[in-house]
Image (cartoon, rainbow, N blue to C red; front, side, top):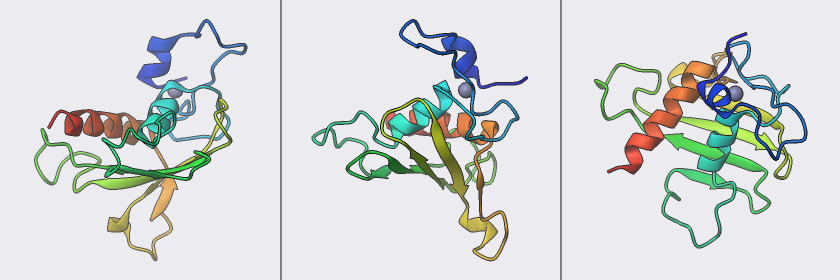
Length: 143
Ligand SMILES: [Zn+2]
């Protein structure tokens, strides 16, 4: 079973009572997950664990006050040509999870390039998109 690079690196965290289950075992997000490291990294970029005065990334994310819903703007990768890469032109991820628990219940990509009429205008995030999004955000923060 393929799984995300961060889950492979993470192994089983010492504090974790149960075995992590990667959200991307099939290559596409599944809600059947527990403490997936990539899903967790995206939740953090959506503001989970951020205090109200940590505003440095506010242009990139929104979240509800209870921190259960989040949305993340993914900037284009500055190291790729304008029309290449899975986040060319930038994009948007929306997600939902219950409180701060281990299961991430939804991560979808909202892609305006597909248009509102297309069935895949919003679709489960793929592993490739998730890992590319983390890289895009990491690179954007260096600027
Ligand atoms: Zn994972």
